[in-house]
Image (cartoon, rainbow, N blue to C red; front, top):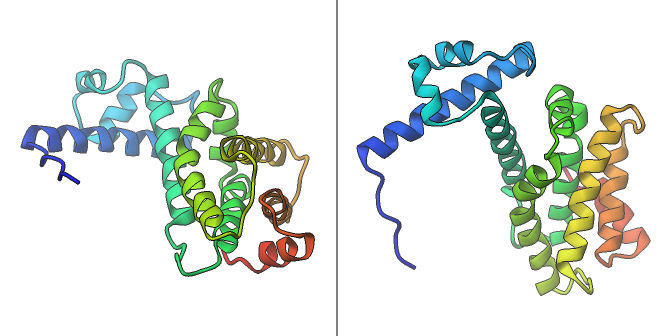
Length: 205
């Protein structure tokens, strides 16, 4: 595998500026909500010229999309990064399923922002799919999981996770929903009822 070329100084500077803008946007969304978000406030918080904003984002909504996408990607990555490849992959799936749905309990402000986006589904799927696919593929290769169609199953799991986040934010589901969700996911992947129930409760998040 070839090594990607090193970034130039200009590319590194642009990457830092974009990161500063999204970090500032994330902080301001948490403080004021999207309705109170102003481009001038973002650039002042990021300590960049206001005109520089448009070198990275066409509109405020584009920055909001970037904040949501990057936050979801970080959630997906950290939900699976501690997965030990020598461990039963069912525990990795249960832990990730629980952590992702717990977003609605642990960060309801961000969860509400996510579900109110018109294109929440594609953003959520794009962030979650690569990590979910890696976990499920490992389980299939080890013989732990069984499914007739991996892509269809992942579509159901990821879509179900977002639907549960929406339901929790709307007050339709309470604490413990994430554990039941993990159990349902494991049963859909081929574990029997007793095994799925044990693993979903024993997985540490």
